[in-house]
Amino acid sequence: MDRTLYALDLAKQVFQVFWVEERSRTREKRLKRAQVLEFFGGLAPARVAMEACGSAHYWGRELMKLGHEVMLIHPRYVRAFVKTNKTDCADARAIWSAAQQPEMRAVPVKTVESQTILALHRVRAGRRDMRTALMNQLRGLLAEFGVVLKRGRAAGLAELYRRSSELEAKLPGTMMSLLREQCEAIARLERDVRALEGRIRAAHAGDERFASLTGIPGIGLLGASALLARVDNGQQFRSGRQASAFVGIVPRQHGTGGSVRLGAISKRGDPYLRTLLIHGARSVIARSKHPSPWLQGLIARRGKNVAAVALANKNVRIAWALLRRGGRYEPDHQARVLAVQH
Image 1 (cartoon, rainbow, N blue to C red):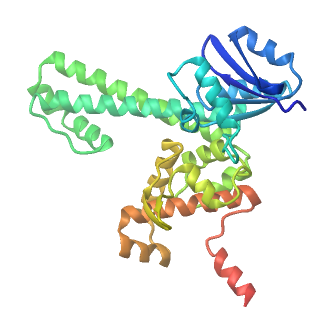
Image 2: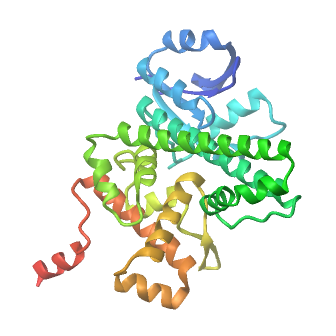
Image 3: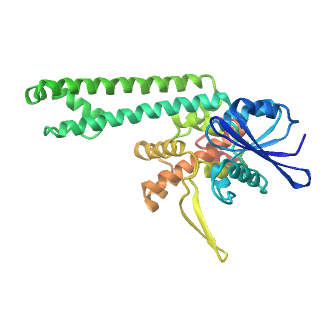
């Protein structure tokens, strides 16, 4: 395999390639979109580095089909190597320099199936946000007429339907017609959200890994699906802590003079996945009838917010272990291990 490293700066139509030949001779080439695969198809299998940005996973899969080794680097790690003004050439050189660094972390190339699942999640999240926006708009419109609804979407709509006769007598006909249209739009979006959740569930039908993850308290349909799409089999992480760091629910570290201080969570990684996991942990804290002694003690010492993040962190590590080694979640697994040891 040719060990030459090619840095490819992605774009919609015009791409920039940078590489270094023997005797440190630098080379640059500008390619149109239709020329990218033709250029790399004419090369011996080599290493290709790109930023993990829009369309990077598509180009990564295409280049891997040609036999190349693909390395996707987070844009945050590339930016530090841009020496002057930001241009396509400067970006390509920065990607090449970043890829040369020892132990530079790479983003795994997603499969078509994983990207399809994540597309379902994004569309569902978009429909949900539209539903929330319409509900807030509905509350604002009614407030102008002195009508205040209960908090919560379901409770607010239920009150609106219950008070329909009162509102018809109080509001103009045009306003009532507008309210009905707004409620119908919200109902359509609600049906879309439920239908998309059904498609996400159907996409994992028969997947033992999905069934295993949903058995963990605090990880439901959406959390398990997003974890599978993001983490896959967990082989890219050496430990559960690395998986938690990938999600962004480990403490920030600040050290100087040999002293290291831990701060708030890093919030790096995918905010959508992190939100699902933390909300799932909050649900466990709010609804669990028999919380574990560990969780009860943590809530007593640090409060429910810190406990929710700690439980989400713990769930990610459990999920990584199940994905890496297989098996099902066992609530009393640690007690069984200790019993066997003694």
